[in-house]
Length: 282
Ligand SMILES: Cc1ncc(C[n+]2csc(CCOP(=O)(O)OP(=O)(O)O)c2C)c(N)n1
Ligand SMILES: [Mg+2]
Image 1 (spheres, helix red, strand yellow):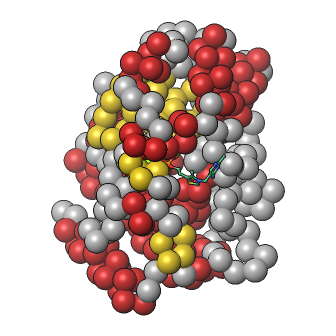
Image 2: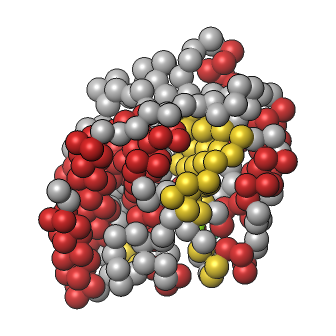
């Protein structure tokens, strides 16, 4: 297992805060957005885009690139912030979030923004698309990989389980899926609304190789995402235990921050909270 050196970890921590600040910048511009799920997966996005994926922001359609699918498309603020941070487009575009005719819609659009690999937003489709990408890469003899972020509430969509079976049946071991298990979905605790626990045993039963990690720990994300496939011939799955709205103490683990209509006062408190995290990084 590879480990991050201390200076690499600090660098990533700084990037993760910058990504969270960009998420807030869009909320400020649009006055509202799906903040909770974007913030819970921000650390996963940071590690994937800055230490794992083989991508080139100057050449977003490079055939040999790794692919990223944000299956839970409502978490798009995390994707927009990460793509801007990585240099796929100018950060000033983030200020158009929520405006008429913006390229940054409420769900990601591959025809509008470089770096967006596929349209998502209707939950339950991303895994099937990712499976198709993984199969296509294998047929083209490319060693690129497909990375996916799903929500835990998203698993209530039955189509995911068809995709889980098909990806395993076809032995697509060039795919790594993260489930952002923040334990909340739109209307309450995932276990109360529609439980698919125990997730590890269910995915193993579908033929996946599964690990469970702290999904807000950059070191753990890196260590576990570097050596895929976990087992030859099997798709890899990381169940990432995260905190919804991670980074904003007043909103953490609260269902009413799934979608946030931010007041000026709340925005000030949020900006202060992120500044404190930034200042605390050694
Ligand atoms: C097919 C479909 N049904 C319903 C919705 C409405 N919806 C948007 S987000 C959400 C909850 C998703 O919860 P989860 O996957 O846990 O995401 P997170 O907690 O990260 O926000 C729902 C039901 C949708 N986008 N697509
Ligand atoms: Mg969730």
